[in-house]
Amino acid sequence: MSQQLSKVPTIALNDGTSIPQLGYGVFQIPPDGTAAAVKTALEVGYRHIDTAEMYQNEKGVGEGVRASGLDRSQVYITSKLNNGFHKPDDARRAFDATISALGFDGDDAYVDLFLIHWPLPTLYDGDYVSTWKTLEEFAKDGRTRSIGVSNFQVAHLDRLAAETGTVPAVNQIEVHPYFGNNEVRAYGAEHGIATEAWSPIAQGRVLGDPVITGVAEKIGKSPAQVVLRWHIQRGDIVFPKSVTLQRIKDNLALFDFELGAADFDAISDLDKGEAGRIGPDPDVFDYVPA
Image (cartoon, rainbow, N blue to C red; front, side):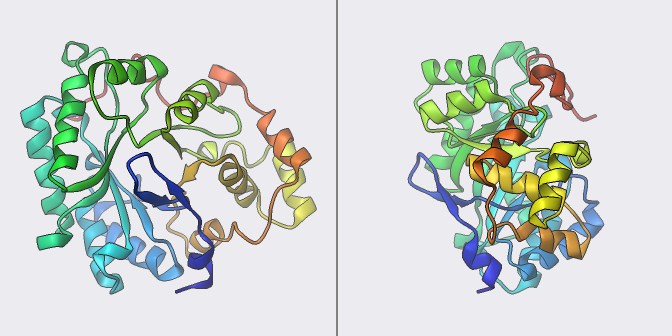
C-alpha cells in the first residue's frame, strides 16, 4: 500500500458503505486515453475513480483498473446515468450498458456508486422520481452498492424524500471557493447525504485569487493543493482531474498539512453565491446528448 493511499480518509455513507474522500475524475479525458490515465492514477495511489455514461470512457476505466493489477474490490468506481435515458426501461438498458462497458464478470460486475447525473426537471414531464425508483432496483439486486444523485437542488431532494423510500447516499454538486453551494450542502448534512464537489477548483479560476495564492506561498503548497485541502477539511468528497503525472501526484498529496482556521475561513469567505456558479443551473438545465 502506498504511503499516500494509507492517508486518504473514507467517508461513511448513509447505507452502511464508505467511500474514499479523494478520487480521480475522468471527465473530458478522451476514451482512447482513459485506460492509461486510470492505470497511472491507481499506480500513484488513488482508489476511487469517477466516470459517467456521458463521458463515453467507462470502457477505459475498466481497462485501466485491470491493467493496474488491482482486484476489482480495491477500486471504488462511480458512474452516472446518461441524461437521455431517464425513463425506467431506458435507464435499465443504460445501466446494463455501463456494467458491460466496465467489462468485469461474475461477482465483479458492479459499480460502487451510481448516480442520476442531472434532475432535468423541465424534461420527462418533470419526473425524476420514477428514475430514482429504477436506481433503487439496481441497488436491490446488488449491481450497484450505493445510489445517489448529482446536481439535485433542495426542492428535488425534498420530492425524493416525500415520494420514495431511499435517501440518496451522495449528491454530487458544483462546489468551489467562489460557489460554496451552502444551502444544498447544509441540506445534505441534515439528511445524511454526503456532498461530492465537482469543479473543485472552478476549472482553475480560483487558483490566481490573491487569498489562495497568499495561503499557498505561506505554507509552501500549490494553490490547487490549498483549495483541495479546503474541500477535505469541509468534509467534501473530491476527485480532481489531470493527465499530467506530477499534478496527479500533487493532487493526492493533501494529507501532510492542514489549513489553519484563519486561512480556512478566508477561503470560505470568497463565496460569491449564485454569481460564482460556473456550471449550468440545475433548475433549468436540459441538455440531452444527440
